[in-house]
Length: 438
Image 1 (cartoon, one colour):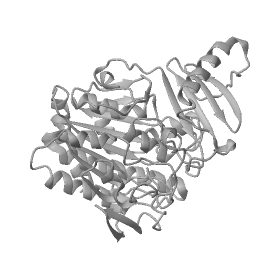
Image 2 (image 1 turned 90 degrees about the vertical axis):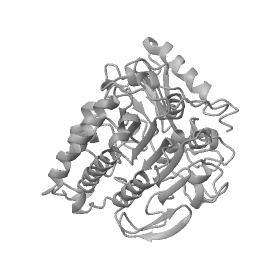
Image 3 (image 1 turned 60 degrees about the vertical axis):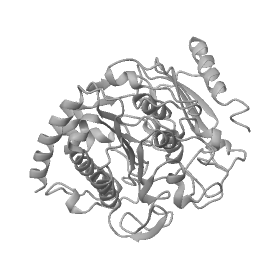
């Protein structure tokens, strides 16, 4: 059954994707899918039938950067501004009264799209707010989404047990759920796409899965290929969760059908691979929570309207997503999104104007002096030079010749003094006294 469904899906979606590449609509749809804790290499080493079939039709971004942890990256996608502006330096505790988080008076992407005729919907994990400034049960809707279904405030264990025993929120209504998170979230999106788009409005839907983030529960067999063997240990559950996410991706893209001719489908991750589910033999150094490439360089693929398939090596940051969407949707925002730079031209093979990528992690999130040992940042320049600060130590790498960060060039090396000064200057321009009030 799984194989037959896959073959049928391939025939339907390949034809619609092929037609989509020659379409240039004024008001496209957006289906934005975020996987949780998936590093740059994870998709290469895990058997993913959907991505194997449809990956060649996507534009695959090889230099897409997020932050090393969940909440700051998710903040970037909504606000288009660096998260330190609003004291988001690490994972938010949804029920805590922290100073940080996306605030009701901050302009957000969905709010702008909704006010310009878009049907906006959010599914799954939010993890952008504490409870000081808003009712966390309504966070996504207060940020401009018309509906928030199969909602998860933060990590599933925050007010649940695991991926089979968790608390969900549907437009503010709380209930206990025992369906596997990926299945429940996918079903909620399926209902939306099947029933809620009869009016023909363009839609912007973000689907934020809770997997494969720990706990590394194995998915139900119905979401895995026949005979799939779940390997023991954390990595086994992690990889099986990825396979189930790949199954869900196929379901959603197949459901779009003719809408694919006017839809961007985007797949990305929020940060790198977790240290407790490492990829054996992985080339990239570091994991989630670190500023190494293994912590901040993540996959992003884009299918759809006018997109030229292939590998893209332009420098892109997750903060650039809002500006890109607004350009593609032909929507103007009068203010906000000040750190976001559109990479829309790259979809057709053009270049990105971004010269530097900024990644930052600090704790706590409540507007008090960060702990030095947990103040970590990185600047990556378009030519591959990377300045990295962690645990009170700076290191310099040239990713153009050393992508796996094996050789620290040394910040005091005279040969690279100009590079260090330039990268430090960009860091200082980001952490100005008015935006980093410490």
